[in-house]
Image (cartoon, each protein chain N blue to C red):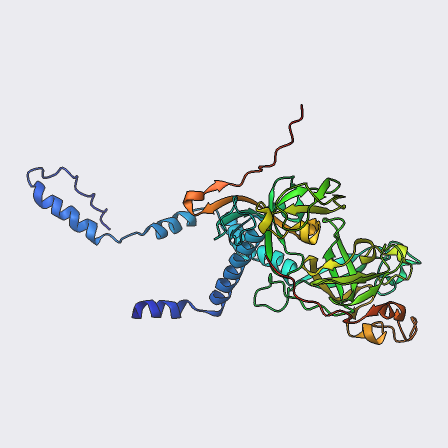
Length: 177
Length: 255
């Protein structure tokens, strides 16, 4: 212990402390950049995506490469900054991309495409909906959201291990005869 | 000086095997213990000097790269303003020179919280902010906050409605240009969510250096305009279209 203290004291010259601080700061910034630009792991919450994510929460692997809606397709689950709450994230499935015609159902309605009006998703916006229709606040409430709010695409559930799986695009094109 | 005596061959006394083993063990104990790290260091010292010097320089500059990227993303950033939408506040000479491009300093710190990526920025009328354009997510736009949540705005030309109440966590952004066709703002795409706002403009660096003070918006002043080129009440007609806190907004329910 005494020896350890003595070596630490001997080594803590200003230059050494400066180097250590610089390296630590660089490591922190590099980790933050990876976390914000490549991958994030986050706990989900809420019942709005029920069969896909458990209402009590799953840890999700989020690809941040897809932020601002880069390379997002219809059927992907995206994470976005909530348009009416600052600093809150949401996760919903993309139903319509810019220019698509979607049926804007009534909020919390259980059936899809029954009532409501057809709208065209504006330029630079996406139409989102949760998988658990009666328990989801989504574009049916607040309308299409700007793609600039999208900050990632949910790729997989990573925890708990029993539910470890890729999150798949369950929307398939309609098969017409 | 006598030549050094050569070491005895290992098989010089084959009859006494047991003591020799002991001797070898003793030698192993007395030999200085070389750790893996010092072996690595010794091997590294044999590499040519230019290589070692470049590794040293790289090691000193490598941490600066993520620090710089982080700084420009979360602390301060320099941006260039293009287009006539903020004329004459920014790009003053746009009428004479259509390539005018002011260099501005943008505060990217989210504000409020401990961490720079927390988004708790407090917005006020008159702040000039940068945000991702709702119409084109690749484009970063720069406009002035004209209305806060709860304000009733009498809109101007391209807008389809006559009046608009700004919803919760949204702001009404407009360019300073007098001609509504020169600015694509909330009159085109409606109130903008505060979550889209990335930064606040602090100062103009070039061509004419000045701090921008958002409190001067209510007083109708323009920074650095000492000879009152823009008159006393700068853009008074815009402020007259805003009814402050016309509606008391309730916090909507988060699912």
